[in-house]
View (cartoon, one colour):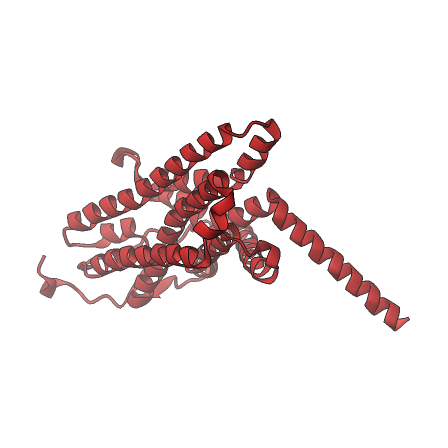
Length: 320
């Protein structure tokens, strides 16, 4: 379509999660609790890793960035979604919509790649423990993270530029609770086949590359674990991977279901429910998975609790 025939939209309007008044209070309360847990758990994980020298290792360096990604892309969507549940005006400026999608895309893509990097880190730690500190030095870790964020940013720029150069000459009502590509394509009166092709190819490449990286790393990890003679040693080696495997399964499983379903089973209402999982639930689960199943994190937490108890006892003693 000729761009001269495009209307210049200044804002979009979200349909939101539901228009049922009876459901709004329940959904708001539930999502507010989930988002607050997400905020506290991810911030707590980042602060904990930064504060305690016991956690200054490559594994926890990557884990702090996982929490940072979770925090960023959930915060790009969560607060606006919560406000819109009761808001009469669910509008968002055109530029705000582009920014929301861009931030979400950068950190969601980065997390997808980061999970593969974390699998590679586990492979290095288990297969070559004696040279682990050298092979995964601060320089290497920083370089890997820089690469992850660069790819995430480049992919987000491509999709954001292509999506927000489309013509929107009809309704400005987005049947979603945030600016995602599928509902935006439905509003466009341009031909979106290039956008859809780029989305399928880039998302497919990133997601399948990440899954391939995880599978290759764990194939080598399994071979390395099988070389360990004692059953206790095998269990100890593989137990460090269970939290990561759980996080990969939840994130990649949701992403594959969301974007690689048959078109015949595609519906925006189903998209909303799936989107809630990876925008609010997964960022909340990740720090809980790593803290509840992680011996080092639990030890640091116990140390902090003991230190706090001692400080409280000293303060009470001084007062008496």
